[in-house]
Image (tube, rainbow, N blue to C red; front, side, top):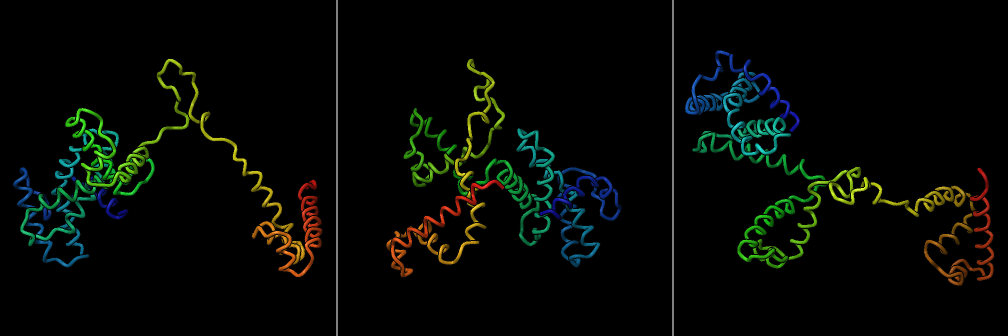
Length: 286
């Protein structure tokens, strides 16, 4: 993908230079001439050895001759003006893939083969980059189907469709509809610095960062566990074993005594001594 993006950039920034080369120069004219010229280049490409400089030159000339297809495909996404340069570059990547995969023996014109490839590459770009949180592709596609079904059912039923009605129209289970609706909330994210009551009468300047999050009460426990780790490691084996049985395995003192072969009272004394020693070292000033 990275190499194709690099080639896409080179194809767009060196467009005029490549077109001026005599042997591979695209002839002046409209779409018909471009199609005829592409057919000639593909026939030439078919007899060349892949990897040679002449093969690369002819392939690049094919890309240059058909960049108009990318421009045509990009117009379909003209509402995304902030991404137009990125969309064009991705479209050129799609064009390069189409050139690499096309075979004149398919019996179709290159335009008919290339346009779905270019548009598909652009749609894949949107799918992979426009979501704030990455969700499975099936949920992304189901979200689109459900949006279409919602509009259709709202007109047909004259009310907002229920989950069951959406599931029936889309041919999926109700659980999948709910999962898709939940995933749809991941499409865009708001900043924590955004006001909670934006453009509302009770807007007091409060931002979301002041409304969400709290101090994690487990943080102190983590610090204590880190401090206890070397202290426990320094204990004799029997004391470590008793601690593990009591607090990791949740065994009673009687069960521990039976396992080790000592009295339950002895286990109680050892636990009290060990815990007291750990507490003393833990609370001692560093």
